[in-house]
Length: 233
Ligand code: ADE
Image (cartoon, rainbow, N blue to C red; front, side, top):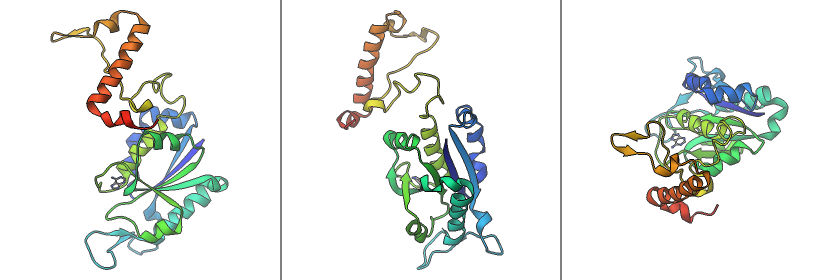
């Protein structure tokens, strides 16, 4: 089972996600465990503050070293415990490695446990990054107010790839496997406002349907993301 510990100041942002069908199933089937740790529980500040202004001036607040490092140590020593040697640490950050299908797949089945740090405000003290061997991951070239949404994106993208979480075959032909986007899909009714479902999809000829879908995948990829066709698999 992959153990994931999330360090955050906003634990409740994960509530609905953890209740959603696929994620609940993955947890019940013991494919993954998710522990939420509140960074604020580790501050020694009498007002429970975790963030302070940056040295050198500037706007915004920085999460300070001590509560964050104590929260990391607690996660490694008290939650992951005997499995801490087999654990990697991720910090969700706009300067990190860009998340894509291959990185999600790698994290999904690499056999490691993960501690994931969600920063807030203007970021975290750089010395935390230096203190541990931390991989930084970004979900896109834009800046969010905190790492929680990015962490949810990462979690969702890795958990759905775990064997048995989605129904059989659901992952076979989805977008980004083999650097192709998925072919267009249709459901009932067979005609809507004069638009008919492509005849071949109701023909019952599965070989022809597969060939048609493959061609459509290539057409859609050329149209929406032509650069994917140049990428190494
Ligand atoms: N935190 C703030 N912006 C982010 C981004 N784009 N990706 C990951 N974490 C972030």
